[in-house]
Amino acid sequence: MNENAQRYSESLLTPTQEETLTVIEEILKEQGYCPTMQELADKLGVAKKTAYERVNILVRKKYLKKEPGRARSLVILKNVSNENNVEGDNESNI
Image (cartoon, rainbow, N blue to C red; front, side, top):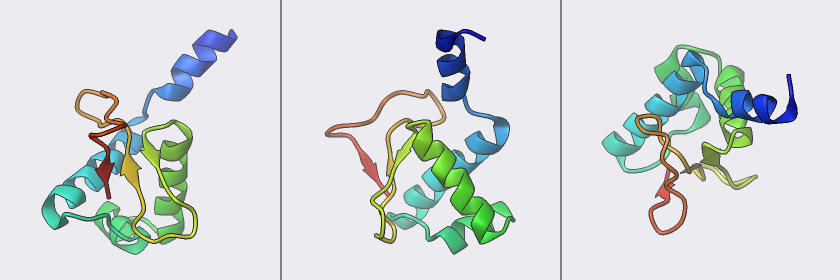
């Protein structure tokens, strides 16, 4: 796989990653703030470590941004529905 193809495939979401991002978006809409890793894990039906790993993948793929060492510090950079970049004035803090 050439470098451009690899970058493209790394930017796409798997169904599991899409589900994780969708659940984060839904919790943000319902609560008005970010879920904890435990709340996210409970909603997804997975272990807290698994939720943490999924969030880190979404951060690496630039769908989320987080501030290390700070609880509830996720920011949605791209959403699932249209994968539009929402960074900047329209950042969704969660």
